[in-house]
Image 1 (cartoon, rainbow, N blue to C red):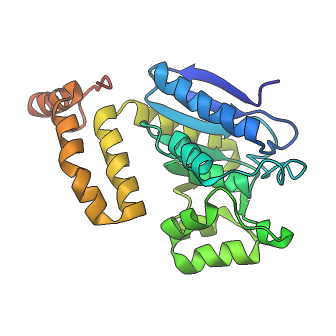
Image 2 (image 1 turned 60 degrees about the horizontal axis):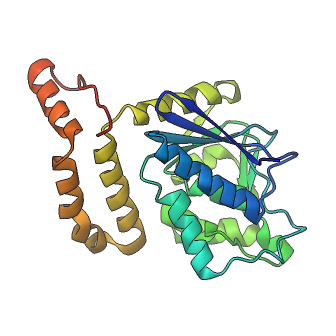
Length: 252
């Protein structure tokens, strides 16, 4: 039985975790998620919305298989590349609990929108573990060293408003409005200049991981890709003809 469902909403690939009861993570689920992201790109999607069709976004790893399904560094690098470096914007819509690996899956998205009733946490330390999918370093990246250590060492659940203040969550929405707000963000990103957005994502991720100099070293490459895109020409032509914000981009 599939753990992931997929549908297209225009140019948005909607990827829903659908593994009863709480989307507990195992290797098969992660591999299916990565292959679904790749499918969305292959089918011409220009953004991805990651969400859950269960009660919670994701309650973390399946402890029954955790010890036997350990990932080595090469496998982790492939996972991060397939989920975090997918060449289109990704938005996580989080309701219920996003714990452990579930929180880490949200952190691998470019943006996180959370219901006001959601909760986030890295509880691994209470089990004698540490976050296995890169959650510590991704919270440090977004919120700073002190907050990353605090979340991982204490293992407490956190209110989404606090994480919004810390810069971990982009936006908190009323629970009833989360689906409409999240798909609105994903549609806006899908309607954007996809080549330029890919370049923005590339240099932002490089800067966050390896510093400004690493991003600077790729700047000419991403600039050239943008200048060679048809959407760049459409954007400038529309600005000259009808003013800012009037371009209709096609993703090429």
